[in-house]
Image (tube, rainbow over all chains, first blue to last red):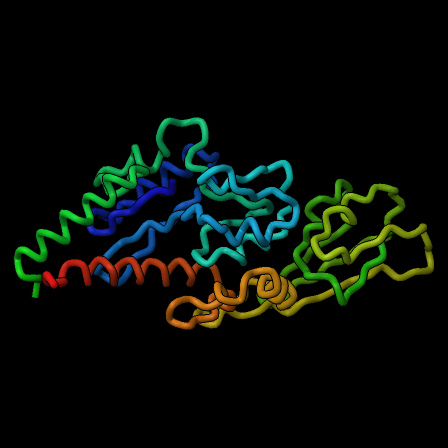
Length: 145
Length: 139
């Protein structure tokens, strides 16, 4: 259950970055990247099924907990191997590692509840419905030129 | 006292992070990382236990043994050129991850790319997908 991003809705305000930092004592786990003038894309942990970070972690600090890729700060030695093993560059090491925990203990991740553009959701059904609606609309218009 | 096998050391600084007495000193410049193990009398073996490469061993204290120091040239990102990791750390990642996952769909060896550039690539991919979705006509 990762956070799904609707790139077409993202307005590049970086509210998700701020919300993430706010609830994680200043260490944020999401970064908004700008692609020229065409888009802004918040880059999140995908909570991969077979997560490279958990394979690279030798101390057992990173592990799969159901769909979540969880992190136990007590076991982390700050070696940074996880950061190098993540293909998306979303496991961070500042002395110790930190990554998206989907705001463990909150009903919804803070980035999702904060996003003013409704670009983020944890609801796969909603994300996929939006994508289908958009595809159908574009097709009905004969594709945009 | 700690003995170190420089051939095994990854340069990850795990030992320096876990040492309760700051006896393992890490210095980093823009393109080089050095680790210096001070002669230590402690019988604690946290650094030995938490070395991912098993490069450290606890040996009896000996004044005559020089304090070991290991230096690593930091590897430059293939895209932006920023120095982001030691060569043995990247080799370690390449050895533990399945071979088929070490190249992205475009054939890029992403392990040799720094995390910031990896995020940029992901952002560009997501943008491309969105733009294509806007243009796609019905089949």
